Length: 358
Image 1 (cartoon, rainbow, N blue to C red):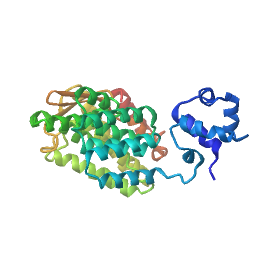
Image 2: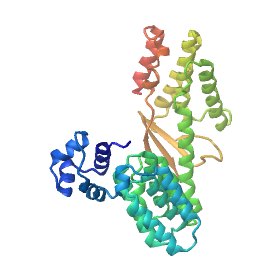
Image 3: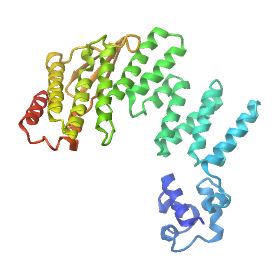
Image 4: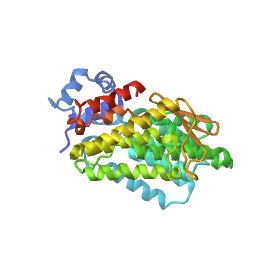
C-alpha cells in the first residue's frame, strides 16, 4: 500500500518545492506538511485534490489507485501514436500525454524523440520538444534520459538552439564531434564533416584501449587483453606503434606488469615496467607538444595528437580539442604492486615517471 506521506515528500523534492511553499499553496502550515511527510498524520480528505493539482497529477496518482508505471504509460503512448496518421490527432495525443503526465520523464523523453525523429519540420512541435527538453534538463536526474534528449534536440534544432543543448554534454569533445559532424553532413558539406567523425572515431578507440581491464583475478585474461591492444596499435601503424599512441602503449604495459606481479612472475613484470618507462620517456621527452601521428588509415586519417603533461590535444583539419588524459598513478595503485612496492627497481620506475610529471 502506498505511503501518502512519502509520496508527497517525493513529489515535493522532485519538483524542488519547499515545505513552506507547498503549505502556502494548499492553505496549511509548514509543520503540517512536515507531519504528513514523517507519517505522523495524513492530510484531510479535502486537501487531496489541491495537493494533486499542485504537483500536476491526478488524485488517483497521488493516492496510488490504479497507478500505472512509467513503462506502462510510455507503452500506451507509443501504441496510440503509432496507429495514427492524422497530424492534428497526433498533436492532440502528444499534448494530452504531456499535460497529463508532467512528471513522467521517460514519457517526456519519448515525446521529444518522436517529435525530433518524425516531425522535425513542424515548428510548433519542435518548440514543444524544446520546452519539454529544457524542463527535463532542469528537473530530471536520470543521466540516460538527459543524454538522449540532448542528442535528439541537438540534431534537429537550428544552430543557436542546437549549441545550447550540445554545450550541456559532460563529455563535450566526443558528443560535439558526433553531433556537429552529422549536422554538417546533412547539409551536404561532406569534406567539412569528416574531421569531426575522425575525432570521434579516434576518441572511441582511445577509450577502449585505456579503460581498466576489469579482469578480476583472471591474470591470463588481463595479459591477453593488454597484448591484444598492443597488437592492434601495431596494426594501425603498419607494424610499428604510432607515436601518438605511445602513452596508451605504456599504460597497457603497466597493466600487463600488474598481472605478471600478481601471478608471481616478477621478472616479466619488471620487463614490462622497464619498457613502459622507456615508452613514456620517448613520448614526453622526445616529442613534447609535437603533433604526433596516430596511424589508422581509413579510420582517423586526419588526426594528430600532442601531449603536454596530462593534457592531450587532438587535431583534425581545423579542429583542436583539448582533453585531460588518464592518471597513470591510478593504475599503479593496484594491490598487485604491493609485493614489489618497496623494491629498488619499482622505486626507480616511479622516479622515472615523477621526472616526467605524469
